[in-house]
Length: 80
Image (tube, rainbow, N blue to C red):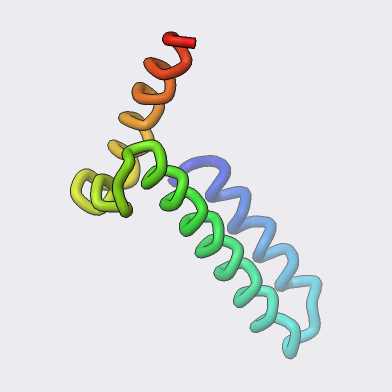
């Protein structure tokens, strides 16, 4: 687990501990929604870079898709 992921968990737990019980579910729902939203946006961006409908990420996984997308963008930027 990366440090940023751990920090997100710590922040969430801190928010939960400082919240009335009935508000805890809303905090958790909000954090899950944020993660899903970012994952969706990242998937869309990778699909544009790889020029597919998300198939590259599905086939090779998120880490490889990101790494390969960096190479694609770097090659594209080098041409400019």
